[in-house]
Length: 334
Image (cartoon, rainbow, N blue to C red):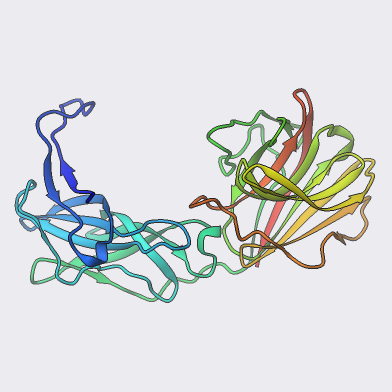
């Protein structure tokens, strides 16, 4: 069935819909595919302008683009711009859409999202700004300038020096983790079966993530990994007398590599990621050099499930009452 864009009056408190819904327009153009959505409007020069998205929003096979429609009356009739779509794939970004027009200091911008072509779904959809102006024929013209410079090497680090977990950490909406920060250390309470995690959104496709674990204070399976969601990940884990490289897909875990290791006080676990999905694992105990666990990269191309950007996560797995203790997490982007 076609997905129309509807308008319907709200009550003064904006808590419920009242009256009768009215169709404004629907997906009747080839480029719109099976969907129009994400409408955001402004009123200017006697017209209502609707910025909207069409086609497939998400994932590796996305086909998202952006269109413009206008009307002199909110409830129509609406006409679509003859030169739609107005935002399409370029040399850097793909699947641009679902935007909101804003005005700042007399200039007009569209805030929208798209995938970086280099890192694709592994870094998720990222926020972008594109300036636009009103054309002499009463439509919208985007001012497409060269892309801005991006940081090439930078570090994202948390040494848990504060009193509370910083706002950069994320976790599953289905499982809020139990955490405590004490003496510059993070205590992450364990959960059985799939474990629990806190994660940081990846900001590039090539990076090294190193987690320092207080081995003597951790009595759960403890590690660091690439998290797609609570049932999909690749990780390196320390269990007290051994290190495991695991691949979890749809909740089923496979041990890729296992080595006997005993750490008295601390152990560093490291993952090296290239192209967002090729992963090497290393560890270091007692201040020694890092020791590789796999010579050939583990292929994590199945991450993330659907459209969830990958997180670099700290993991704790074990029975209730057990815990994992971390000194810090450092992610170096190349």
